[in-house]
Image (tube, rainbow, N blue to C red):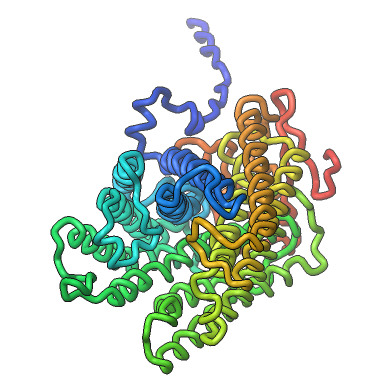
Length: 565
C-alpha cells in the first residue's frame, strides 16, 4: 500500500488593502477622464478655491482704491470693471458651486452608502461645462472686462462698450453645470440610498443639498434665459429690456431676481448643511430637532421662490406688492430661525470640543444671525427706501451670503480634509487663521454698515472726505482677512504632504461617511454598509464613536476624552 502523499503547503492569504482614490490610478489623464465622484469633487474644489483667491484679489484692489476720497491706484472706469469682475467671480465661479459641486460631490454618495453618483459621466461633464463657462468669463475679463456690476442691470448692460457679452455667455454656460449637478444629486438621493436608509435617516447634509438641487434645477433656467436675452440684445440691438427700443428694464429685474433670490439659498442652504454635520460632531450630542432642521431646508427652498420682489421695492411696483414680498421675505427668516434654535439646542449640555471646524461654526452663527436681522430690516419697505443702493446693502449682502458661505466652506474644508487626504493639519494654526478670518471679516464690513447708514452710495469711485476714516478701517479689515487666507493656504499645503496620518474617523463622528477609510477606496467602502443607527446619533447606548489616529503604521484608538485605549 502506498503511503499517502503529503498535503500541499498552504500559505495564509495576506489581506490586501484596497487602493484609495488618490493612488488607484495615476497621471493627469486618469484625473481628466475620471468618473470617480471624489476626484471630480476635488477638481471642483481646486477650481473654486482658485476663483476665491482671484475674487479676493479684486476685492483688495477695490479696498485699496477706496483708501482715499479720490483716485488712489485706478481710474473710475477701471474701478467699475473691478467691482464687476469681483462680483462675477465670487458669485458664479465660487459661491454657487463651492459647497454643492465640491463637498457635495465628495461626501454625498458616501453619506447614503453609494459607490458613486447616479450619472458619473454627467458629473464629469458638469466640471468641463464649468471650465468652459469660466473660460468665457475670464476671456471677457482679460479683454476689457465689464462695468455693469454682477447683476448686469439693463439698459446699461445692453449699451455698454465693455466686453459684457462673453461674461454673460460664461454665466449662461455655468448654469448648465449647476443644473447637471442638481439633477445628479436628486436622482442619486432617490435611487441609490443604501438598504434601510429611509428619508428620516438621511444625514442633514443630504437634506440640504437635496433642497439646493431643487432650486438649481428649477431656477437656473430662468437666469440662463435672462442673461442670454441680455447678450442678444447687446449684440443685435433688439428691444427686449431697453426702453429706447420698446423694451422693459423692470422685466429684466423680475426675471433676474426670480433666479437670483433663490440663488441666495443655493449658497446659504449648503452652508447650513455643513453646520448641521459639524454641530453634533463637536457637541458629542444627538442633533436637536432632526425633522425640524430637515423640513426647514425644503421650506426655505420653496418659499425662496416667492420672495424675489423685495429687490424691487424702489422700482415702481405697487405698495401692496411691496408689502406682500416683504412679509414673504420675513417668513424665510422663520425657517432659518428654526435651524439656529436647533443648533443651539444641540450645544446645550453638550461636551463641546473646540476645534477649527467648530470655530468656523461660531463665526457662521454670528454672521448668519446678525446678517439675518439686517435682512429683516431691509425687507421692511420704509427702511429699504433709505438704505437702497448704499453700503448698508453691500454689508448685509456680504454678511448673509459671502460670510456665511465662506465660514461654511472653510469649516467643511477643515472638517473633511482628513477624510479627503488621510492627513491632518496643525490645529493651533487652524485656530489662529480662524480668528484672523472672523475678526477680519467683521472689521471689513461693520464699517460699511455705518457708511451705508450715513448715506454713502455703493459702486461709487469717489466719496466725501468725512467717509474716509470708515473706509480706511474697512480696508484694514480686508488686509487682515487676506492674511488669514494666506495662512490657511500655507498650513494646508504643508499638511497635504507632511501632515500626520489619521485613521478613518479622527473626529469621532457618527456621520455615515466616516465609516469609509481615509482616504476612501475607489468605491468608497471596504464592506457593505448597514444603516443600523440614525444619523448624528451620539446618545444610543453602545454607540460611542472612537477617534483614530494612525501612528507609526499602526492605529491608536482614543475615547471621547482623548485617553488612549
